[in-house]
Image 1 (tube, rainbow, N blue to C red):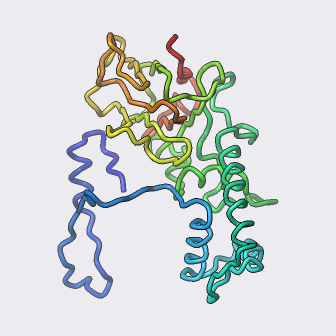
Image 2 (image 1 turned 90 degrees about the vertical axis):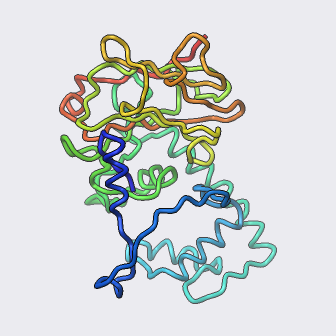
Image 3 (image 1 turned 180 degrees about the horizontal axis):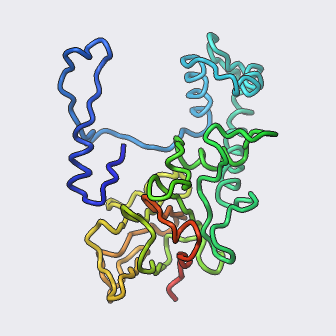
Length: 295
């Protein structure tokens, strides 16, 4: 759940109104509590190796089949992954599936970070791409299922809605993604970069820049929150533009409130989000420069 008011306190108050309770208790719902699982090990990334297949088998056994998944479910059946059947792979199958999980993730990573979909680039000659590159929320076109486009988005993310597809003027969100600097080199957590965000970002609500680990696809784990947005206390230039900085150490002569920490030995990618995008985004009279390596 995200509170999308540009005023942080209003967004928090909105989130606090969320109430969850059993339908059977709807006449007298208990108080809902918002808890922080502090001290509890947690990760947002999918399991790797055999743990991936074990989780998949568990979900298929618990959830009802969906019509569009029937052919994929048929492909899993020879591997012993079927609804109502225990998943008990022998040594040979375990070895095959472990390798398959590793290869499959590499394929998904290439599909997501080096998109080959026509029209996936936002502005010609720049590195920014449409992260959510699907024609429909059901991932269907008149002639085929958007297999690679689906895999690209859902390797990085979890869900999808029409509001996230960047089609609504003055509402919803746009997800712009970059994994490379202006020269086309992969973003490196051991190097220093900067991004100049021009003034008058075309949003009715706010914009946000977030750094993700390109292996886990989760927020990069530096002990600090890896996001800066227009509703934060960041330093703005006289013309309304903003300069952001990224690297393992804060820039000595730059505002540290505009800096996001990265980790040496770790690659990263970013989403630049526009909340409630306006016309200059859609007609492309406003554009975002590439991330620049600081030499």
